[in-house]
Image (cartoon, rainbow, N blue to C red; front, top):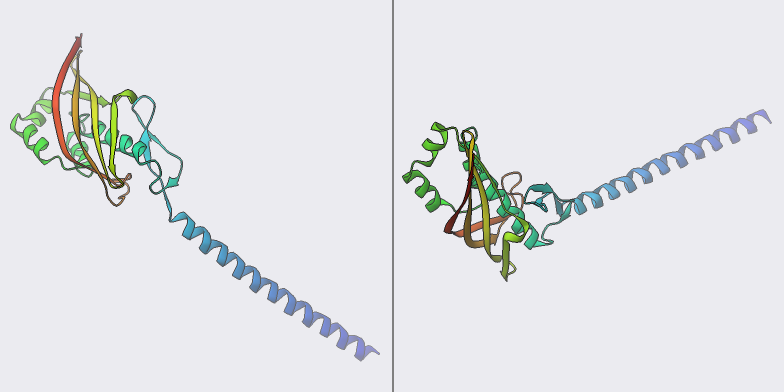
Length: 205
C-alpha cells in the first residue's frame, strides 16, 4: 500500500509540474504576442506639437501620424516664427540652426546677412519675441501633400528699455515630408516663403 501511495503521489506531482510548465509556456507566448501587437500599434503614432490658443507651442496628445494636418501646419509655422524671428543676442545661432530644419529659407538668410542682422542683434543685446495669433493663420489645402498659407507674425523687439512692435505679413507653401524628431516633429517643410511686407506698430518706452 505504501508503495502504491508513493507512486500515486509521484504521478500527481508529475502531472502538476507538467501543468504548471504548460501554463508558464502559454502565458509567455500570450505575453509576447500582446507585446508585439502593442509595439506595432505604437509605431503608428508619434508625439507632435501644435499651436496653442495664444500662439504658443503646446504638446498634443499622441495622435495618428497624419490626423489634422491643418493643425500641424499651424504648429509648424509657430515653430518657425518662434525660432527664426525670435532669434536674440543669446540664442541667435542655435535658433537659426533649428529653423533651417523646418523649411527652405536660403534667400531669407542671405538677405539677413546682407544687412548684418546677426551683428546688430548681438552688438545691441537685442531680444526678439515672435508669435502668431490664432486668427492670423490662413491655411489652404492644395492636395494631400501640399498646403498654401498666409500668416501675420507679431514681432516684439526689445532694445534696452524700449520695445519696438511690428507685424510681418508672409505667405508660402508647406509640403508633407517624413517626420524627423526632434528636428522636424510635424514632418512638414516650408517652401517659397515670401515676406510680403512689414507693418510697423507702436514703440513703447
